[in-house]
Amino acid sequence: MTTSVGRFKINSKADNNSDAFVTVTEFAGKGGADVGDDLVVLYSHLEYAFKRIAALVASPVNSSLGKSSGDGGDVGSGRDKPKPLDIVSNEILLSCLRNSGKVAVMASEEDDAPVWITDDGPFVVSSSGREGNAKLVAEWQ
Image 1 (cartoon, rainbow, N blue to C red):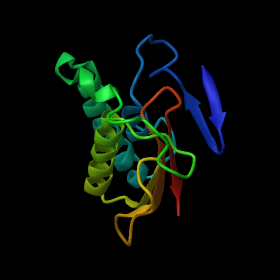
Image 2: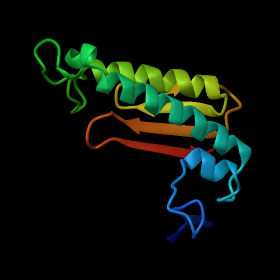
Image 3: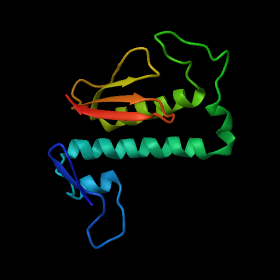
Image 4: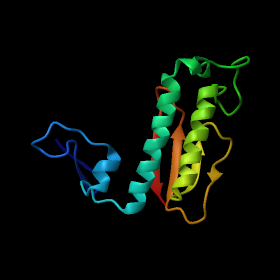
């Protein structure tokens, strides 16, 4: 299956004769999409963050992380009070983006203001929680 996204033409399988699927990092890194090395590095760090967050969610030891603490009231600006898992997920994502060296700024629902990471990062990342409406956007500066 081939899809066009902007100027990129993307195949969802490793090749047309294979049923094997590949990760975004593998696909971009092997030339399946015409993206730069900076984006491949960013994808790799995001993939690591998502795996760490998934491991937290899957762990029965951390079952209380998904529950609200305190009164669960509004925290201003129309936002709900973040759950502990939202906060931990945000910290994992921020840490991985810092380590990538490719992100200038991260804006998150969990932070009151965008977090400046580096002066020379080519990307800005915006995330919206880890719950069902989770979105992640990476944009070139």
